[in-house]
Length: 358
Image (cartoon, rainbow, N blue to C red; front, side):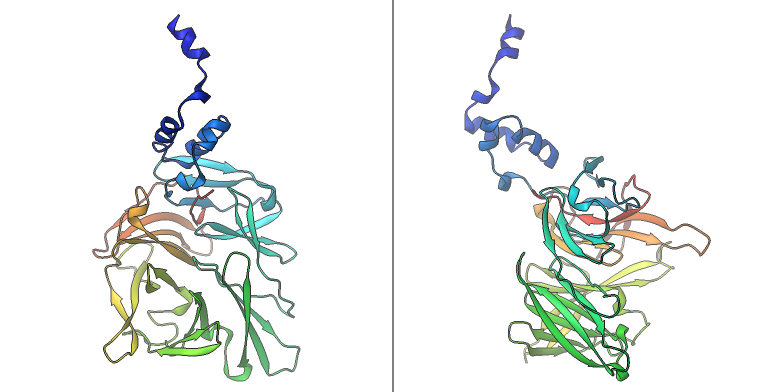
């Protein structure tokens, strides 16, 4: 008799306070979604803001653009297949923070959150040659290069900086083509500032985007020996760690690890005289870096269950030789000690990190 009464009980009539307490025990995003889908009463007892921050998922690289997007959750050991019509026929070129970047054969690019289908178009650029795109990182910025017509001695660099989720600002930088290689500089957009890093000298020029004026010039980091030396600016990123601006270099040292991938981190600092410079650090406090082969983002570790502070989480691809298939691995690296730990991942080709949010 008691079992029958339990089956017939109207669970939607539970007090909102009780439902809210139950919802707070659901630390996984899928369980939270299922809870809110039971009925209107359960849905109204919670808001999306009640979802605790989620440990970043790993995005699998896909080769058939009609397939679902596949993600893996390390803490829960689960694979999630996410179907969204907005990704069909498009290549997922990278993931960063709460979005993945999609590319269509027509050249159209966009940023997509596949969990809520929020899509941000990346501005199109009419150019004679194929545009180069840098980013997006945690703070979106898109860098495209356009050559002028044949015979021109100038080319223009169009830098799209995103102020918010729907508004972009375009800057045009005129450069002397005769004295400038396309690979000579890297551009990063962060908190209204444009960081222009010269690969030859290591000097960083910082421009205030709102006023289009030079804010300051930063000398190269200690030990920078120029292009193609230890600190190759083609393998770096700049990010904001709760107000601290970090510059992360990736370089090779096969004596340290089989993959040869190592990292040095520099923080932007100011001395008593007001001079700005990069200083190498081995402690980023209550933060963790999530890096792919081509960028990444930073999170506050204490906000996320399972994320360890002062660590680098790195999804890597190692090319073993022309005839051999690349090897993939996901690692956690302690920044202070250099200790490495391989993390579980069922994907043969993990593409990058994605923070699941609704």
